[in-house]
Image (cartoon, rainbow, N blue to C red):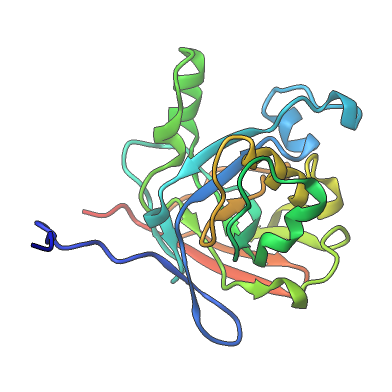
Length: 239
């Protein structure tokens, strides 16, 4: 006899794709401290060369933290919600078993978007101060607004492209992507050492300096040059 669900299954989160269709999200990986200027503003040392990079910092957000309509409720349990604008990588193929070679990583990429890694900074700081995990500061509801995805073939070279974020018309963050400490193939290689990468995975690549607080009513506009735009508004806390 075929087994049946005892509760209604939640819908799979999906991100729109430019040109038609949607991208079903399996997992959301995030990279911490992947821009030297942001590492320094968070009080961490920034590597002076590739040889000094060590290993990247990874964390996760639940797939259902994705927001595609640009409407975000100010989250509970915080008074210090921060924005972090990031390049988002969408994987369209499963990685082969074992460690993924750097020079084979690009073949997994379906496309790119931009996103906001929203962070309850006060919860993160409190957890760090006690040497505790800070999952609740990152993996909360509506913590991952994301733009539409553009196929990789339409993006070309990422390095010279400018990632930026305006809040209420004021530029808060901007950097070219050649300032990433670990680039996309290197990050996929490092992730493959820890996880089985699959089609449907998203990778938030880390944020440049300039992270700061958001307030209810704030309007954010994230851009990747003139290629991609993400508009987001922070609503008053849900009743």
